[in-house]
Length: 325
Image 1 (cartoon, rainbow, N blue to C red):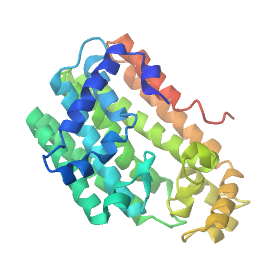
Image 2 (image 1 turned 120 degrees about the vertical axis):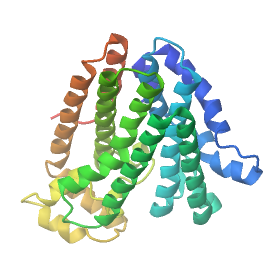
Image 3 (image 1 turned 45 degrees about the vertical axis):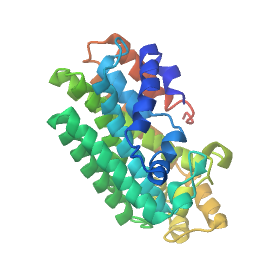
């Protein structure tokens, strides 16, 4: 997915080019070693979805973003990057964005401390932008933490429920996307009704984004994913398709017998095929449609037709590579 191609907001694309400079400068301390750690994933690239949501929400693609608009996007991207530093330590990941992960290159301790530093820089930018933004970032960090704890608490549990799953992704993905849209509404000083509408769109976008990612983990090929298909199964993160499959009358018991511990390649592939053999993928895709519909309801109240159309196109693009039933 190329978000700029879907948004068709030329000014936002130009704004994001300006944001890249601010993003790197925001974490450069003046110490060559620390700077290499804190900018490692920044220079590795990325879609910059969170800054895109922030800047588009602030400007509707109809004016040039202010420095405050850009810094709002920087603050959310830094929080996201910090979470990646910490996640990669927990997952013992070796690659992120086609480069060595920070923990693989610099070690776990440096990765954790550097992630904390990125979080601190995010908070400092938020403080400079005012109490509303600072409070938003604090609440977002709390939601991220709750989501991560929920996921860790149910790792390798074949009794994980749909509520457990949605609680985790609402915190880890939904909250961050929602806050990305809201920070743009705050820096642009939009009316409360527009802030709420954009926040709800961001939440729905985040939920669809994560559901899509979890579907692809089961059905995409290794080459498409850049990692082994079914990796979440191997690591004990039983996402919605797997939760549905575990309750399937035909293969549920067999799947329970495979899961519950770290899987080798053979068992990972066996578990993946069992999930695919159920209606778990179809039911998960149905969940994406629910959030898609909710997002369109939220967008309907925005005054900018240009932004409404751009955001509808963006969220619909998430579903284009999923199967149809």
